Length: 76
Image (cartoon, rainbow, N blue to C red; front, side, top):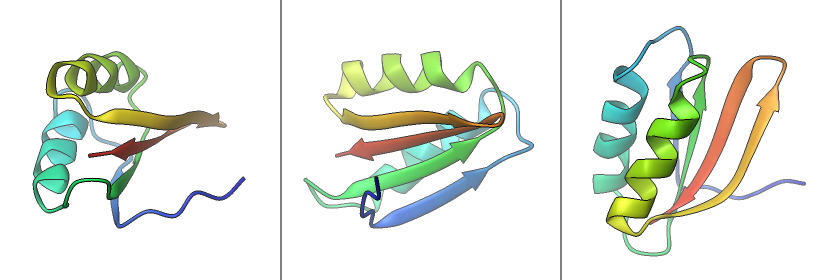
């Protein structure tokens, strides 16, 4: 399944809190209903993203683990 996105952020190799900080910067560049796609290798990123999205009313469209690369599609 392919999901269209407006901004891609590659945080592979970065540890907490960098993936979340870069996601925050990326989402600021988006208009409402646009999608940010983030890839990360830090296994703690999923919890950080989940809590952040719930707090700021962003919607996680899909998550995936592709051989240790965690993928997140987030709608602003």
